[in-house]
Figure 1 (cartoon, rainbow, N blue to C red):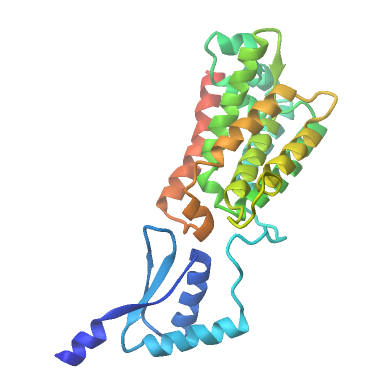
Figure 2: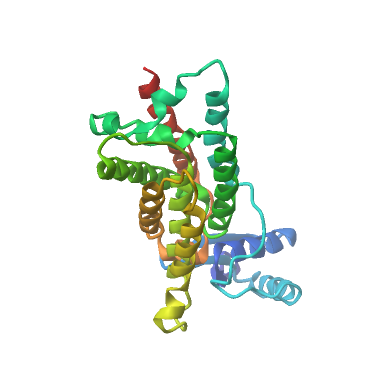
Length: 293
């Protein structure tokens, strides 16, 4: 009986970010060591094993660390490409292709953000305008810059957690443009979403700045850098300066929505992420149903 109780007793052998614990879990699984991965309330994830397997499990993790030294927390973003931005960019890409086709020539008039019509209650234009573009150069510029910014953002947090909030705040930015211009102003394009994403990225980097970085100049470097990039990207002959500015400012707010421990320790994909992805597409779908009805 004592041997059975000792075998069932479990202890912690590792505590780290989700990505690190996932690697350790794969190592233990390859050695057929039974273990549990448990998230904690404070942020880190833990690996629990039976007391009898603890010595062997620690040895396997130690060997793995020798061959793959751990990276420091809050390290600079790595130079890599992910495919996460594609499902976000698919909406403006597909709808713009339909917009440019001869079959549906009235899509622009039904979905463009017209300040006077928005103020009269046609709220759906705030969303539909994000998926429309003026020409091929316009859509390519937004898709390329959007992929660049969203790719960097996805390295900090899964885009499923931010896509819907970014969409809502981008629509709100279009609404603020309508309130500012009042009438005789029409706009369209995904650039508002891109600038909101850039704002979210800058505030996330600001939050993850190591505590030992003292001084306002270093502390606010991510915000200043992103602001200068936003100004550079926002310059152009037909640029909607107000939409870009409002989008960037509201994006800063979105960057403060995720919990810091989620940014620092990582998030594993759950059913909640699936619901958030569906909500992103549903917002566009519902808006276009109102626009075409």
